[in-house]
Image (cartoon, rainbow, N blue to C red; front, side):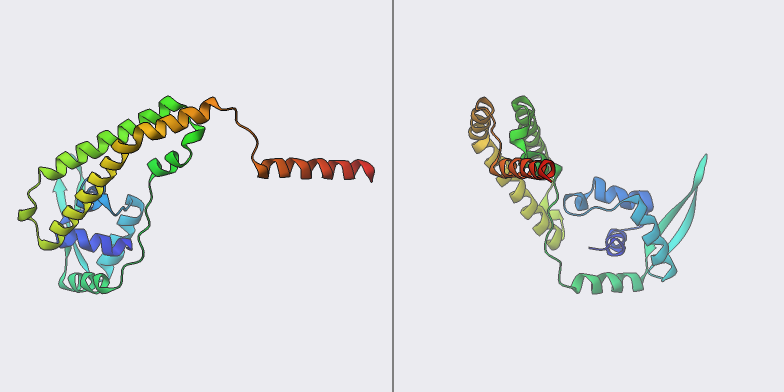
Length: 202
């Protein structure tokens, strides 16, 4: 989803400053499935304001620069709806945890165990926080997202808890077995030796 639409979506829920919009993606409901940086939010708000999709009001602050607060216009709401009607692009899942875990066999075993324990704790804390929210008070769409997200976290927690010891056992076994060169590495070494031989022969 482009950052213009993300800004419009936050402002649909109420007036907000650029900082508050960023906070919605860092700590709010959107943090689970979208992201937007300050570097993209402020230029987007400038364009939205120029296009008449948002209105900007300067609010005085004591001992601080004036705060710009943005409000969605009717044209902005219409644009948001039009954007939401477009078919969503396929999901792209990004995760540093998954990326590091992909190379778990290269890491010290205690580090992998720590990584898994931290993720299990994260899932437990997130699930506890989400279950404290009363979905009945949410609009239908947000209630659906809440339930779907909670299901994803619960299933992820269950999978890690049920498979953690097996993964650790496999990794321990791999670490105790001397590493050998892969077939590709051996082939590369042979090719390099052949090139070197050819150089000396020529």
